[in-house]
Image (cartoon, rainbow, N blue to C red; front, side, top):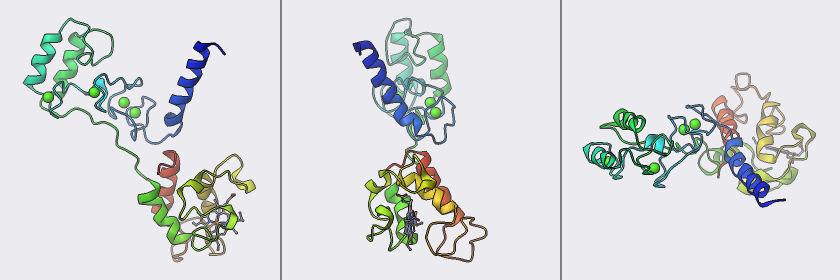
Length: 220
Ligand code: HEC
Ligand SMILES: [Ca+2]
Ligand SMILES: [Ca+2]
Ligand SMILES: [Ca+2]
Ligand SMILES: [Ca+2]
């Protein structure tokens, strides 16, 4: 492998990680809202020259006081028609009228919004559901080779049931839940409307939370 293909490969791995996580992408730039440093401005390159977590495309707050106003405008004017970095919001290598119109859009407003963070995490959202519905089989007994109700790491064990070919245990949960196979022996159909009278089954909200967590790459 040449250095160049090696770098290209590493880069592909780096960007495929978070992007493959999927999830809602409001500005349709390929970067999910949960990690998009300008979640409402299309900026696929995520360029952030002052490294404050807001991409340049949504960061005319040049003095970093949380607000875009005349202080930022005067700093911007000093950089006008130069190749300055932070003042180049559009990323074309030059500070010009294109960038001024971005500043205009944000005048008297805060920068951003940046990344929203995951909408469902294991600790806050998913673990409590599994702890309640998957006990005691997967909260200590290790039935089926995992304790997803208490161990985050178990979400990443390769699943061995044939229903979940190529998936890990965390991804497999929703498949088996919706097939009515889990929680095992509880008489659930997997359809929340039909299972409404059975408190052992997951509600529609709980299924949606598990699905969102999987779509976001199963964050801890
Ligand atoms: C009464 C015990 C019991 C309960 C409760 C239970 N399970 Fe299971 N689970 C099993 C058994 C037994 C297996 C292994 C056999 C099989 O796959 O059917 C299993 C297997 C699994 C697998 C497949 C693991 C693999 O490697 O393929 C997943 C995923 C799973 N369970 C998720 C859940 C989830 C999520 C819940 C709660 C919503 C749950 N289970 C509740 C008994 C249970
Ligand atoms: Ca986006
Ligand atoms: Ca964006
Ligand atoms: Ca920035
Ligand atoms: Ca400012």
